[in-house]
Image (cartoon, rainbow, N blue to C red; front, side, top):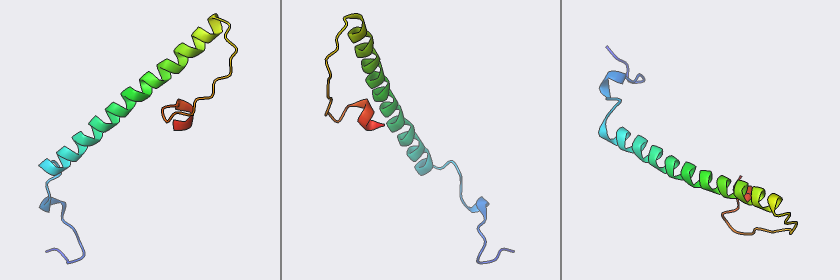
Length: 72
């Protein structure tokens, strides 16, 4: 006997196709974003090492949308 205000979890399957597709989409999108952030970070580290070795003291203002400082 169930009441009208209760929800029986046996009525809904947890691993149905729709839930699986949403989870897969979430994982793929976040993996792509993590990959982009990884290369943005590597580029910033590479520039810092290069400018330190070459004694470059120029001030660079990066106004692009891909600037890691503005993304974070």
